[in-house]
Image (cartoon, rainbow over all chains, first blue to last red; front, side):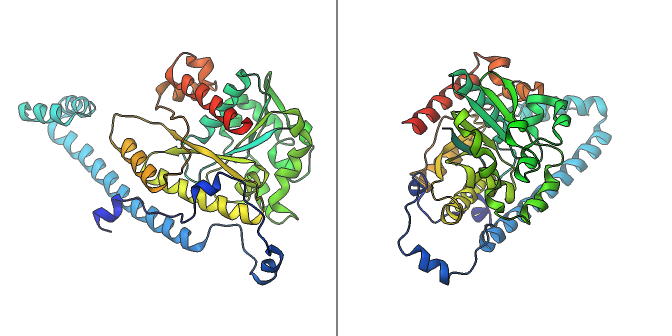
Length: 110
Length: 256
């Protein structure tokens, strides 16, 4: 999946939201329609379900990679720089400020 | 006669239970008689409100009223004045198969709660995130749907699935079901994503009825973990104010 495609939220509802805010009107000829239409299930259409499963699959794989990378980074970095340095580094990371972190790393001495 | 509102979204973790609980308290504080119905087998709302007492309701809960093993009156728990609860229970998942195979399976909840609707002004139903017989029952029994919305990629997708499901329910089991509104939840400006998604949502669905935005709040999480409403935990905070505003909005839309 390309990055653009992944970032943009797909439109999965093709109806009018405005109409959903009002109770629906009884349709004329509803009885006739009932005779011809197949029995519908109340479960979400297969098409939408498939789209959702694909999206969740992609997201699941993406998150698995992130988790694996995080675990590796945590484990090996801690071993490499020692617990004290690692705790200090993590407190800089937890500030969620890239500028601060860059400055901290530039001054970091092993 | 009570107006029945389903709080629903097929995505988990968007704040359905938090919204049900705090909106219920806010409406009760306005003097409305409120019944909360927990139809989620995870029973978070029930646990939040009555804790371990949930174990005493194995034979009187939302599942047993749907299977007609108990009467609805016996399943109502008074949480406080003006605020009652029909609890969920650990055994609710097991009832699912029983209800799926039962006659009139989509209308079990509607039939069960109809006798007590005149006793309340509002009934709020906390739903499971999964699409199944409980959510279908809830939407069939409801006048309105309130969709809590997390402004993230999957949050917006979950909202669209609810639109599709609502359309299906309106054509099959409940033509009176209406969208009451979307409640953006856990909103923060600490990252750009929520604002971006909100903008995107307004562009894609310009008619979407957006209600009060609930801010991301540590107080809300703490209140939930202590099993109290935001009004008891931090009554003057911004989250409590947002829920009060939301309750007024709900009353204004529903009662006109």
